[in-house]
Each structure stands twice: as C-alpha cells, then as structure tokens.
Length: 156
Image (cartoon, rainbow, N blue to C red):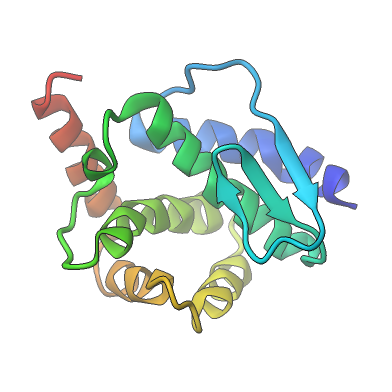
C-alpha cells in the first residue's frame, strides 16, 4: 500500500521540493524504514511508523525527506530558518511547512491533503501546529523565497 502511494507521488514530491528551494540531494539513495512500535517518525535515518493511512504516510515521508534536503545542504538547523521564532523547532518547520503547502497545492493540487496535514499536527506537543499557523497566515512562496535568499547570502 505504501509502495503504491510512493509510486504515485514520490517523484513529483522530490522534484518539487528541489525546484522550489533550488537545493538538491547530495545522495543517490535515502533509506526509509517503516516500523511498528515506534512513537513517532524522524529523519536521520528516516523512520516512519506503520499504521498511517496512505495519505498520512506520504505526508510524513515528504516531511522527513525535506529534513534530509536540509541536512544535505545546510550546515546547521538554523540555516533552515527564514522566519524567527522563540521555539527553534517551530522556526525550522515554518520553511518546511511552506514547502509542503507548495507541494500539496501547486504540485499535487490537493487542498484536502493540506488540511489533513494541518489536522494531523493540530495536537502536536512539538509545536508543528504553531509552524502551520504561521505558514497559513503568510505567503508560503515568500517564506521559501526568503529562505533561498538567506542561503545565498551565506555563500551557498
């Protein structure tokens, strides 16, 4: 089920995240581990818990792949921040969520996927909901554009 979802959306998502950011992956392969019994997903290495719906699985996997894109191109987490926030995890996820919004709306053309991701993050104890609030109140393309300008000013 997850493989079919990846086959349907994976290449589009990878192409889109690289296109909007101007960044590229520095590796040819990224292993993804789908496991049960894990409380949450993470990106290094990518571990996605099982029991997600097809849509939630793909949304989480794209989220973690954007973290990998950051890792391949940014020296430190703060490089991935374009909108400051007192919570560094929230700040890092503002650009990430802006990229996701672009993928969901402009590439997949699925507003329901955007809503599903926002709902999925609504009760987050990590502040993912706060990052989404900021992205939804602003211009997601400008957030990514500011991020790109910041990276160029740093000489990358």
